Image (cartoon, rainbow, N blue to C red; front, side, top):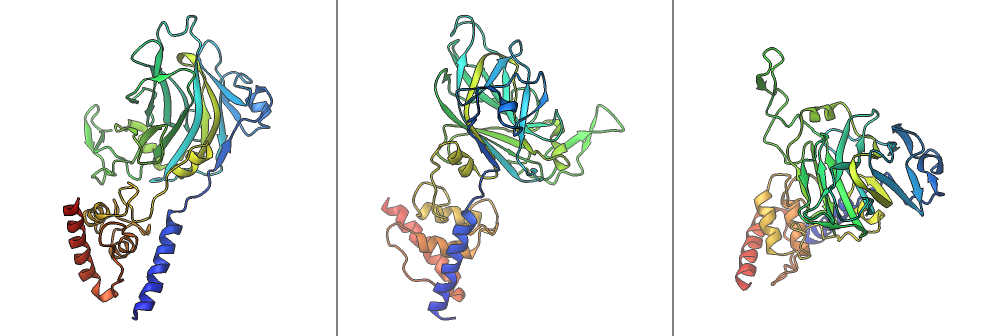
Length: 363
């Protein structure tokens, strides 16, 4: 193969990498530009009631107002996304919102746990990625939290948040590909347990788990994750999430004023849809620090043959093609200009490793 042919081939790989990194549009984005009043009525049926007293979820001044106290309102609504979460796949929802303190004397007294947004299936009780509002470290603050499935708050954002401040949040949920519990209740000998025949292990770290980001710039921003999947996480294998839900009630007392929501299969797309500015990276910038350098080569080397990292062209494996894309995009000292013939790929890899070592020494 001539060098020109190799270059044309690699150019094709580079375009495929860019295409592979491209993301699908959100399933829907809603800015609540409806007349003041019932969200269900004003949206023309885009949002529907699935529990509670109808017509209590309100729109006011272009915001969905979600009451986080059970004595104020009980209506729960959802909007179908026109797709269903498949086993092993990930969904994201994002929102731009602020919270209003509705205690009799704001900033004093207690705040309770209230979940107010989540993924939902076609029924009324299989919820995933529940977003919570809960008490902060002082009476005048609050925190956000997330749980993968159960109705008990699992993990909480580390920093206090302020009432009246606008926040951008993203929540993800990855459905189980296999039941992520190593043991399950033994049906013949309760309450003892037995090995789970569907557990393949080791855990991927994502199956059946939900994550939360607050004011992120991209998916690599700080997040918290519910790492303890509950018993019913295995239902993901047969029951997929198909809607985004807003839930009223709980132990606020407060309100969530939601300017815009979006749901989709891409972190960057839902963040952009609510007005965020997700940072994009070159395909070979494996550690997403803005540079294609020796650190990325080290990531590729450590992940070689796996799908964990170092995959620049989205073919689900870190291999020689990804090394060549890294070589093309390398921006560190001693930029590589020659493209190796396929037969000399291993030699090129060795040279790349030496180059990485040199770059590190120069640092």
